[in-house]
Amino acid sequence: MKMNKKTMRLAIVSAAAVFVLVMGIWIGTLVGKNVKLNKELSQKQDELAGWQEENAALDALVDEENETALMEEYARKAGYVYPDERVYIQGS
Image 1 (spheres, rainbow, N blue to C red):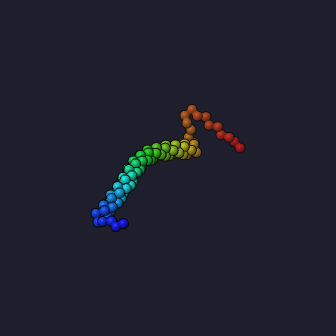
Image 2: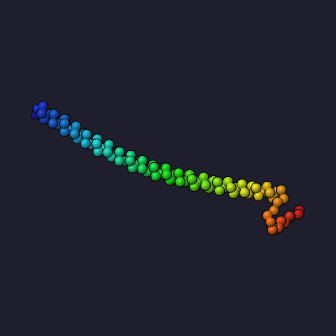
Image 3: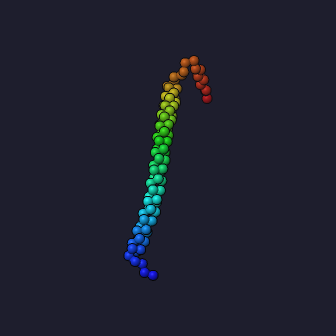
């Protein structure tokens, strides 16, 4: 069966329209996923920034405690004691 030019043109236009529609839906889905992933990324970056702030605060606290303990150790070696502290020295 032969197709006339008008029928052939209609078939090509219909196929192109279906292709464009399918591609539009596919691209729309990809864009939607991209928007969702960007939103999740932004939330995770905010969460990371919060954890980094907390980590920095904890690091400062640890450094401060270590510094205090180190200063106390040096002071004890130099013979210093806290007021009202009784120091017992073991003899060997």
